[in-house]
Image (cartoon, rainbow, N blue to C red; front, side):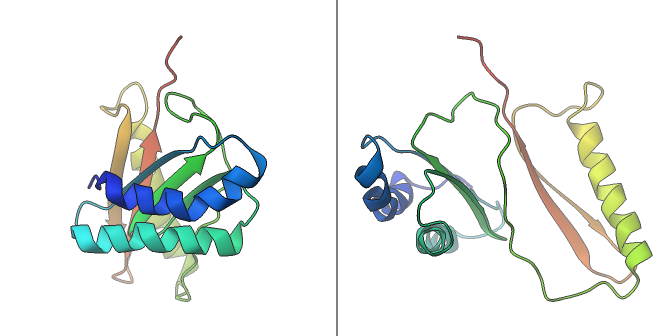
Length: 153
């Protein structure tokens, strides 16, 4: 779900103090939420991400925040149309797989499907997809994946 400019603006206002101390006052940001949640939940996740980023990464000029509900990325340089690898720290779950080999099989199946989707043989292109698979333990594994294509200037 795409969110309104107001939610992103709230994130940018939270982050602006960190930027204006050391760099130009230009901030690039994007945020998106899972498609199966409501607008209020999405906006709340994005607004809360700003505070969580300040607590975990107070001096960072470029951050990707992944949550179970939303993803937020901001930078002091343009990120649009640029392919770049970044360190991602994701929240962990206290739940542990009872049978790790079965969990790993389910995870491999999920990742193989994503690899095919983004391969030349698959149908994937620029954008974000959500894929899931079910393990023997009746738990659902969900993966969000995104791809950006570099544009020539």
